[in-house]
Image (cartoon, rainbow, N blue to C red):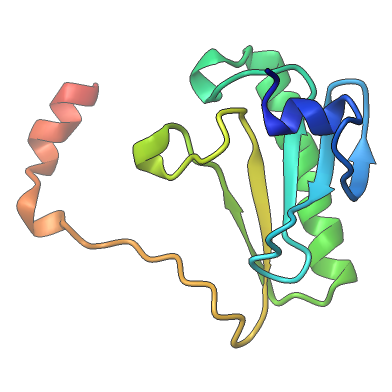
Amino acid sequence: MSCVFCLINEGKIPSKKIYEDDKVIAILDISQATYGHTLVIPKEHYDDIFSMPLDLYLHLQEVVHKLAKEITTKLNASSCNILNNNGELAGQTVKHFHVHILPRYENDDLKITFTDHGNKVDLDELKNKLA
């Protein structure tokens, strides 16, 4: 059985599409974590960033860039988060690559936090592993 985003792309599940080209669609997220919460999704199924071809990823990011500007401006948002999760531990709940555009507003109740573990990591050692 197809995933929910494949079914949306095939027109088997209704959605509120705000953008479409030959490679990607953008739909309003049904959860609306913030007003205007949008998902940008490749039409072809790829589980995550690791399985996507680079040219498609770059095209999708161009669309994200364009839509983030438009959504933030048109909805009078003060800021915007661009979010992508890859894998279950990273919070990916639909195994079809997608990018969230989250317009931000004063008192919107959305919390995205990062914990500082800098004092527990040897940055030189980490750099050597990644160089």
